[in-house]
Image 1 (cartoon, rainbow, N blue to C red):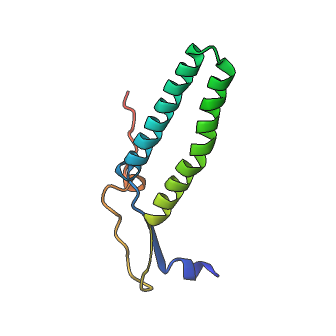
Image 2: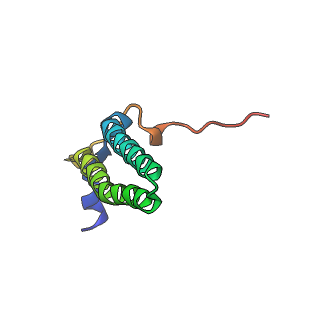
Length: 105
């Protein structure tokens, strides 16, 4: 594949924070419940089980969270063919198209 073939496609990522907000909330609820159960086990004089419970919950839920993030990201990637010679316009709100803030003295 040469450089000219790559220029005939438009690659856009439309992912926003709102797309993953629900996933983060569900994971935070899961961690909170895990910590609550660990505190209950601490009160029952079982500190080893409490630490193991938190570790197990984090260890088991992290792959699912990562899978959800990656699949959400891949669902928001658009690759569209563009006719050669067509001038593409910047996407409104795209951070890469904005000017950086300049310091004034």
